[in-house]
Amino acid sequence: MSKSVILAAGEKINPLVPHTAELIVGTIAFTLLFLVLRSRVVPMFEKAFTARTEAIQGGMERAEKAQLEAQRALVQYNEQLSKAREEAQTLREEARAQGSAIVEELRAKAQEEAARITAAAHASIEAERQQAVTSLRNEVGTLAVELASKIVGEALEDQARQSRIVDRFLDDLEKSKK
Amino acid sequence: MRSLVVLSAEGEGFVPPSSNDFELPPIFGDNVFTTKPIFLVFLSVILVSLFFILSSRKAAVVPSKFQFAGESIYAFVRNDLARDVIGHEFMRFVPYLFTLFTFILTNNIFGIVPFLQFPTMSRVSFPYVLAASVYLVFHYVGIRKQGAWKYFKEIMFMPGVPKAAYILITPLELLTFLLVRPLTLSLRLFANMFAGHLLLLVFILGGEHLLQGVIGLKLISPFAFFIGIVLTFFEFMVQCLQAYIFTLLAALYIAGALADEH
Image: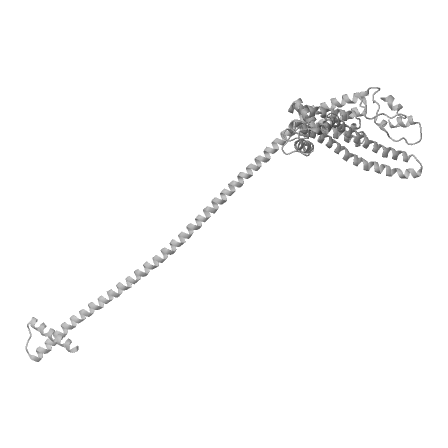
């Protein structure tokens, strides 16, 4: 080969003709590199790829799960909230109904009381009037009898008769009044 | 090496770089296993192995920057090349495609790494080896999957084609599968690296030569260097692209062999 270089000034070497040494070395070198890369490099990179895929997939699954959970919680909270609102609504209505019932009851009670007081007053007035009438009647009777006995001079000792006379007198009085 | 060629030219004039510039002499005596391309190939094996072993060693769920760098390249080959092209059976071929991609990429990029500055794949032997491996792999996969008879029957007699067309299609298909595919695969990679390196040599050696000329030529030489630098960036793109294309085509061939009907 070194000879050919020195000769080269005049003649041209055909670059398409391979050299045996280079063919051998090329084959060995390529095979060597292939064996190294196949045994040492490719499995390691594949391992990294697999691990990474798993890590990413795991992360995504976790995220999905968390999202689902959050959604479930949201639905639950919304449900609870609406339930609480409904409850509050019923409570309010109940309270309103109760309040109006209490007012109604109190009013009825007050009216009753008023009626009772009025009735009692009426009754006592009536009793007092009756009493006054009775005592007046007695007094008037006594006075009239006294007066009449004084005038007539006749003693009306007989009690029964006396009161009969008085009654008749008063009845007449009332009749005349009418 | 360059000086050797210049000396042997025995002239003052500019000797344009040629295919001879790719014939590097052995570093130690006459041992043909000690040339620069061969050292570079071994260097690439060591660098790629070290880089990926170290970056994949921890295989953490949350990667360090270093692990992320290695992982990105691996994931690119695994997902964008192997999985998208081959389909559900892709995992079996990931180590192979991954090796192809990183091996070619590293050796290509050697073309613009300072002090190394030689794209190993511009030595046609290496693309031959790689294309041969692709050739063996995809035929083997096809025969394993469908049986030798069915596999070659489907190559020769594509289903759904009128019988008369087989006169034309059968030889073409056979040629494609048995000869054109491995040849184009290796030559595409080789020619791109070869031409790219040659182009850089033209501008940089040309710039150097101009610098030794008269004052007027000296003034032009910065432009030659500037274009050399621009082309270096361009080469970087080509180097990555070629590694990608080689691996993509390998994946496509494997996918074709795996498919029940193509």
